[in-house]
Length: 96
Image (tube, rainbow, N blue to C red):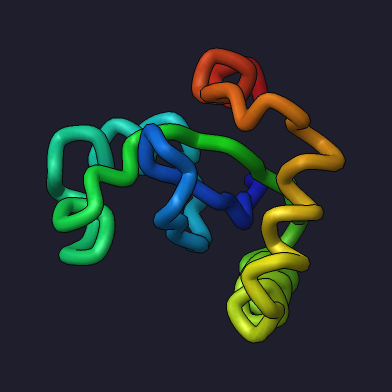
Protein backbone atom coordinates (compact mmCIF):
# COMPACT_ATOMS: atom_id res chain seq x y z
CA UNK A 1 0.00 0.00 0.00
CA UNK A 2 1.21 3.48 -0.83
CA UNK A 3 0.91 6.52 1.42
CA UNK A 4 0.86 10.13 0.31
CA UNK A 5 2.05 13.42 1.73
CA UNK A 6 0.03 16.12 0.02
CA UNK A 7 -0.49 19.87 -0.15
CA UNK A 8 -3.81 21.46 -0.97
CA UNK A 9 -4.50 25.14 -1.62
CA UNK A 10 -7.44 27.51 -1.90
CA UNK A 11 -8.31 28.99 -5.29
CA UNK A 12 -6.15 32.09 -4.74
CA UNK A 13 -3.24 29.97 -3.38
CA UNK A 14 -3.04 32.11 -0.23
CA UNK A 15 -3.98 29.32 2.19
CA UNK A 16 -2.53 25.81 2.12
CA UNK A 17 -2.91 22.56 4.02
CA UNK A 18 -0.39 19.72 4.37
CA UNK A 19 -1.55 16.22 5.22
CA UNK A 20 -0.96 12.45 4.96
CA UNK A 21 -3.28 9.76 3.66
CA UNK A 22 -3.40 6.21 2.39
CA UNK A 23 -6.15 7.07 -0.14
CA UNK A 24 -5.41 10.37 -1.84
CA UNK A 25 -8.50 10.47 -4.06
CA UNK A 26 -10.85 9.84 -1.14
CA UNK A 27 -9.06 12.41 1.05
CA UNK A 28 -9.25 15.13 -1.62
CA UNK A 29 -12.96 14.38 -1.98
CA UNK A 30 -13.41 14.71 1.79
CA UNK A 31 -11.70 18.11 1.76
CA UNK A 32 -13.91 19.30 -1.10
CA UNK A 33 -17.04 18.20 0.75
CA UNK A 34 -15.97 20.10 3.86
CA UNK A 35 -15.23 16.92 5.81
CA UNK A 36 -11.45 17.33 5.73
CA UNK A 37 -10.45 19.61 8.58
CA UNK A 38 -11.65 22.83 10.15
CA UNK A 39 -8.81 24.73 8.45
CA UNK A 40 -9.62 23.43 4.95
CA UNK A 41 -13.31 24.12 5.39
CA UNK A 42 -12.77 27.63 6.76
CA UNK A 43 -10.40 28.67 3.96
CA UNK A 44 -12.08 26.61 1.21
CA UNK A 45 -8.94 24.64 0.48
CA UNK A 46 -10.08 22.33 -2.32
CA UNK A 47 -7.26 22.18 -4.86
CA UNK A 48 -4.59 19.45 -4.75
CA UNK A 49 -1.38 21.21 -5.81
CA UNK A 50 1.36 18.78 -4.70
CA UNK A 51 1.78 15.20 -3.55
CA UNK A 52 4.49 12.65 -2.90
CA UNK A 53 4.15 8.88 -2.67
CA UNK A 54 5.85 6.92 0.11
CA UNK A 55 6.13 3.19 0.74
CA UNK A 56 5.39 3.36 4.47
CA UNK A 57 3.20 5.45 6.74
CA UNK A 58 6.13 6.49 8.99
CA UNK A 59 7.97 7.87 5.91
CA UNK A 60 4.91 9.87 4.87
CA UNK A 61 4.36 11.24 8.38
CA UNK A 62 8.03 12.20 8.71
CA UNK A 63 7.85 14.12 5.43
CA UNK A 64 4.61 15.84 6.49
CA UNK A 65 6.21 16.98 9.76
CA UNK A 66 9.27 18.24 7.91
CA UNK A 67 7.19 20.22 5.41
CA UNK A 68 5.05 21.73 8.16
CA UNK A 69 8.19 23.17 9.76
CA UNK A 70 9.31 24.82 6.51
CA UNK A 71 8.83 28.53 5.89
CA UNK A 72 5.93 29.37 3.59
CA UNK A 73 8.28 30.57 0.83
CA UNK A 74 10.02 27.18 0.79
CA UNK A 75 6.66 25.40 0.52
CA UNK A 76 5.64 27.70 -2.33
CA UNK A 77 8.93 26.95 -4.08
CA UNK A 78 8.42 23.20 -3.71
CA UNK A 79 4.95 23.46 -5.24
CA UNK A 80 6.09 25.79 -8.03
CA UNK A 81 8.95 23.49 -8.98
CA UNK A 82 6.63 20.51 -9.49
CA UNK A 83 3.50 22.41 -10.52
CA UNK A 84 4.42 25.90 -11.83
CA UNK A 85 0.80 26.97 -12.44
CA UNK A 86 -0.50 25.54 -9.15
CA UNK A 87 -2.97 23.50 -11.20
CA UNK A 88 -5.35 21.04 -9.57
CA UNK A 89 -3.62 17.64 -9.70
CA UNK A 90 -6.57 15.59 -8.50
CA UNK A 91 -7.01 13.91 -11.89
CA UNK A 92 -3.34 12.92 -11.90
CA UNK A 93 -3.68 11.59 -8.35
CA UNK A 94 -6.52 9.31 -9.41
CA UNK A 95 -4.03 7.28 -11.45
CA UNK A 96 -1.48 6.68 -8.64
